[in-house]
Length: 143
Length: 107
Image (cartoon, rainbow over the protein chains, first blue to last red):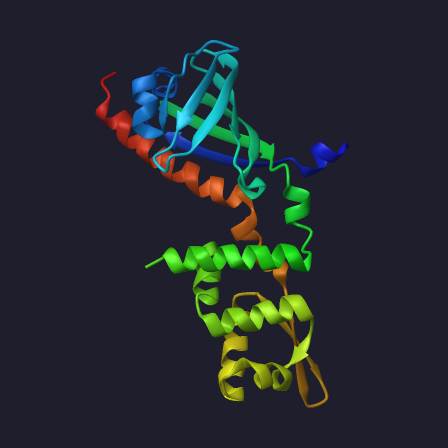
């Protein structure tokens, strides 16, 4: 296992949805529908297509379509570059759709790593001081 | 199991409690007496704060004779620093919105 693999982690969300795969596929691949549930975008279901997802918070994700199997599987990169390395993220999002009980089992796996993850989990005093300072800022913005 | 982020935020929202936790992170294990000397509040108040920190999994206590020594467990903060925890709640809420959208879409 190399250093990158050792730091790679993933998030898996699975949900049984009472709609057929074909319908969910439209929501995953048509830009005006993607915008309704995820973010503003210039998506096109073509391998190699580069696009952006623009969040309501003003951030922009850099993405590239990696795999497309109509009604079955969609995968794209999901990268976030930020001046503060603590917020950087390089990841891949993969949706899989499997027919189940008249509906669909929709699975989302996001795997990737934060380039500074090793440093962030080191627990050095300086790191924790920085983290606590950031936490304090966050808390002061909470009502 | 780590505590969910909201419990950690609630626990660390109190400035005195946060200062006690930060001192344990930076300076290592200490007794209630040593912490009280610099906390600016009474010993019972410090003990109460330590009890809340302990419940949130942020500190550990160790009894030695009549003294109790407290140490920080910075690993308990992982749910706040770990991108996977943040993304999991992001996707759960996006999936809720997706289901609402699917109900509105025609076949």
